[in-house]
Length: 213
Image 1 (cartoon, rainbow, N blue to C red):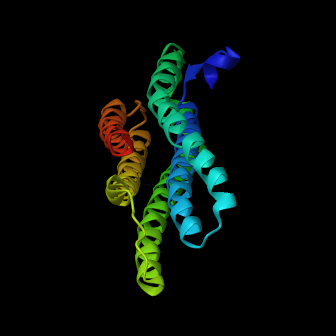
Image 2: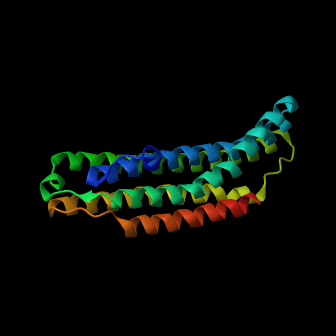
């Protein structure tokens, strides 16, 4: 994070795009960690059904470690992203010649690919959670046993799928806006787009918090 380094800054497009990619990497990692925590809780049901009781405490601890703490970190991303964005905005402006640098187009493309990777990662974990529930249901039928799934977990896969698709769409819009601005010889951070995505992310995180209770 920029504030930890206290580096001089300028309002240069590649710096904004680089920061965007950094936070997308954080977001992807934390959502993967959270999804792993939910799957760990479901693994306890599978292990209990297969009588591997000695492994159950490990996955229960993993669930506690990767759910609420990770959700808190996801909420904190908003704070740090806004602080870093304001930090860059305090820098001096750059000339139009620097904005029309061809390297900015490649930076914008890398940022768009980061949005795609983040969205696909979230979607994949949504599918994994949904298929794991399907597997447990079929296993219960095969073993003629009752495997009770936590009812609130059933909505989490839809949230992951929706958020992943929205992330890709937001990345595409941001890419097109960046290319259009650079073609015009100017660049401005996409504050409205950040706000819309932040609001969507906040709603999704609030729903995930509700489902965990």
